[in-house]
Each structure stands twice: as structure tokens, then as C-alpha cells.
Image (cartoon, rainbow, N blue to C red; front, side, top):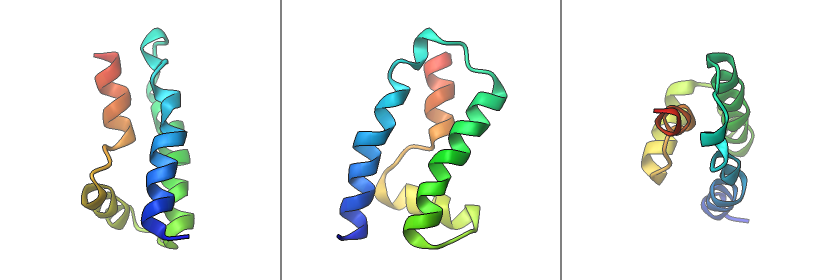
Length: 75
């Protein structure tokens, strides 16, 4: 399977867990835990370990950073 297709599927099928998050008050440790789990997808899919590379991939594919999404839901 193409990495782009797999990344799109993971982004659309795995991120919906965030949509019910406005009902829960997230602590900073919750945000860090979810961010770490989301970054594991990029570690395994692209076989990279540098956070800067993961940020570049997310920007290239137009994927919002998960911690930004969690914080915007809370605000």
C-alpha cells in the first residue's frame, strides 16, 4: 500500500477520537500522551525518529498537529 494512502486512512479513521474531546478537560499530560501515540504512526510508517522530520511530513501532507487540535478544542 502506498504510504500516502495509508497516512490518509490513518488520519481520517484514527483521529475521530478527538471529536468528542470538547466534553473532557484535557490536562497537559493527556495532550502529551496522545501526541506521542500519534507520532508513533509516523515513526513506524516512515521509519524516522526525528521530530523535525515528522513535523515536515505533517505540514507537507496538510495534517494539523495533534496537540494544536486538542488545544483548539479546549479553547
